[in-house]
Image (cartoon, rainbow, N blue to C red; front, side, top):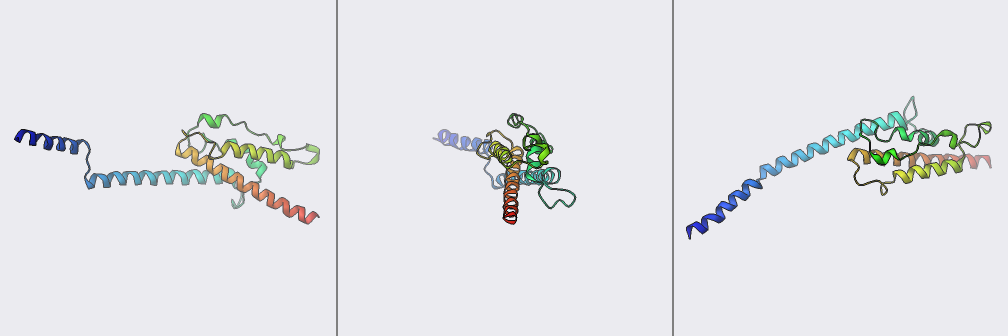
Length: 171
């Protein structure tokens, strides 16, 4: 009777040693997770700053988005590998859009054709859409993709708003 009673106690001790469930262990494990969340947040903040300063905002004041045609033709420079984020096969599949593909003709000026620009914006937004991204992207890679998608969306809306204002003034 004593030996059979001793065995379950021994098994309990072994289980406790292999799976520590002490409050202090859980507390420190959570602190490690929080630290990694803080590190992730700091990395995202640095990536966001780099994208905005180096790609999205217009110098010298950096308080206005660049025109949509400039963003679309240079978006490949902001995709991983960029800003210290490692590359992924998915981003290498994107074909850069040259500015000449957006312009009707040089004689008409260097302004983008709205239908060609709309097609290019749609191409970029489909490529970067959060639902279309591969599941194996790192947190930083998916953060960059979401950020680029948001910025191009905002810039496109700004373009349409400005175009509507100009159309109203012209008529």
